[in-house]
Length: 226
Length: 226
DNA sequence: CGCGAGCTTGACGTTGTTCAACTAGAGTGG
DNA sequence: CCACTCTAGTTGAACAACGTCAAGCTCGCG
Image (cartoon, rainbow over all chains, first blue to last red; front, side, top):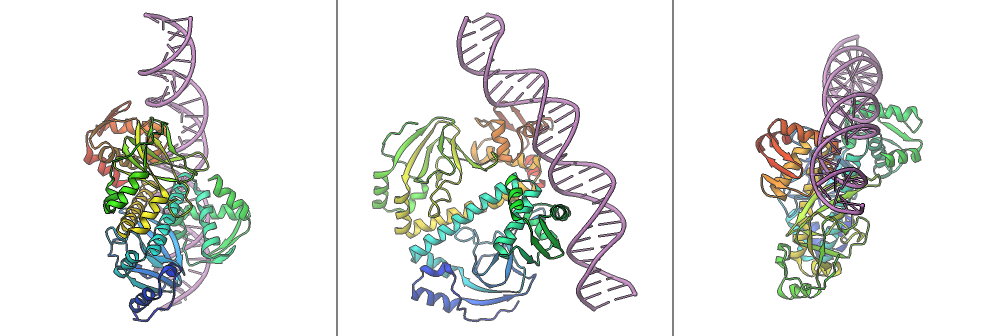
């Protein structure tokens, strides 16, 4: 991990409600950090000292538990911001973030961030809206992971990767079979078997890191039926 | 449901950061509503028009999905406040709330609530902290429900009921076996069987609506091991 | 060429659901 | 006071879903 104290010019949508002076203060203090693929950006349990803005690259958000089981919650990329529920609570990270590709990030001091929230009501409001969206997503995740069978869960993951992460019906990914398993709450053996089934049914095509969704409507149907 | 336009004098902890004038505005507009056991306080999907403060009684928070499966997320009671992630997003309810007992609530106009958030920074900050706590709880729920087996999940539910809801190792509950099943993500048959096992092992005693936790340490162990 | 990590396959066992039947207890009407 | 009914609770057997384990495969890389 290289730690260049660079000025960062990127402006997350999130910062729209900041005035020029506030933006200037932020710019003066924030700095760029590069991560190589596979490197840990921060670890669950460690201190939350910075809010991180992703300038470039994809990252995995991991929920780890005491029994060494891991849920891959989502993939973040430009222009996402990574804060985490430690903000204004215990100031610790409640998930780990690992670079999936080479990643360029911008670190913003959390104390400064808090000062912005306290001094700028629209900014605070947009943070509240953001947190509520997160909660809605978690509700959906909870329902999907507990109520659906493997087929449905894997279909969800494939649709998520295609629609949100790679924004194409065809993609090559650095995610391993185990990563996909952790996204869908199943074992990698089950991922492989279910992918094989989907392939046999002509719903997808896949080989190694290459995926192509052939029948999205069927996949959506499987997702819906669970 | 009776709708008495009563003044409400109760002051949730949440309102600590309001000044006297703000508190006065709130008091002038909020009103009390009584619900009988089993009545729906609000329904998932409906419009979020009021933030609800529970003055008396216990309520069930239900996450419903399209396939008629329901997760009982938690039990709320005095002095909890029910808002929901619709606030400042789509202004809809993302869960249903049903009275478990006769319940006395206080309705606060959500527009007024929003005005308070915008005009009072510490209030906004405490809302942000509250939302982050919710997210942390959801992370735990997600880990527990997906990674643990039935024994562990039911143990979690029993500990939750004993520690948080009834605050006693011994309690009589209006929750049915199906409610307990929905809290633990299992069928009511499985709840009955697992309760029987716990009883046979001398970990708990239960008959009908009566529960008594005999060996909490063992229950905690089961919860931990999953 | 050989090594190792990730991928794949099959056999097997466990976990948990489904379904159908049965029971207990609370209310209801005669 | 006794049928009658209704709902929640309970039980058992059969089955489906899914994880585990062990072995073999593939492919990139030194």
